[in-house]
Length: 328
Image (cartoon, rainbow, N blue to C red; front, side, top):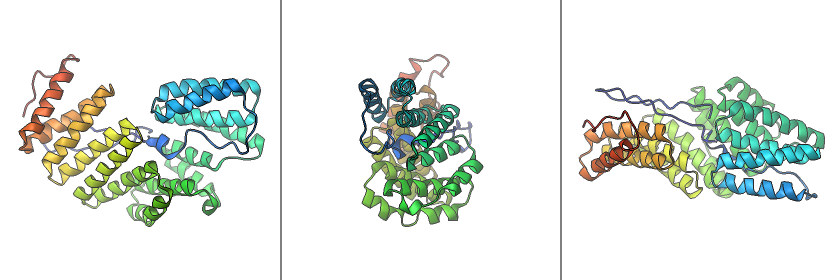
């Protein structure tokens, strides 16, 4: 869902300003909040080719291999279209939309969700999770008005499954934060941890950490926010969502910096940059590294400073146009 934040580079010679922008999103972690497979109701005959392809796509999705999952779900969707099977068209259009969200292809995701809803209407049963993903898509595209309208159009939330009900509350809190309505967001999140304990979902707990952490930052509780972002990164590591994990480490680095825990901040920025570099996300890795370089000036642990120098040298060896040394 994941929805992803990006750091603006620090301005030379002054305290940085960090801009966390929603790039149409993960949402983060869209994959974290919704299963890659929508419900199709009672057991029914399934085409063997479609089944094999969709099963492989689900495995790729769960491993965070979204491009591969998208290719396979596209194949499954085409097979379902050839069969004119409304349930499988609905399922695979939905699943491909989830992949498209993870890949930042938001316009395509919305078109696929429209196809999914139309197909499920043919069956007379629209899965409750579809509305949740539609709201995610609207938020990802920055269409807050549309997201709010979709939320208001949902009825019978109390009858939803616990997982879907929690996702709905998290989305309402997310929207409130984007609208700068902190009190409303806090109200939506109140009591949610008890429900989360009953469900036992690392993914949903990680999303709650993100939203509660943002609230703490707004209230100036920087160290407490850093602890939540650390916890979020641990949960994302457990679920093998490594890019949002790295972003969460950077978010913790920002919080600890604001809390003047400079060495903790440096450690988190370094680990974030290293992870993103290993994932071949060079632009984001360099953004994180730029913050690590700046906060290193205020950290007195030479070993951490050396880690940053070594990573910088490793990256510099693979790219042209970088400075020849770090200015500390």
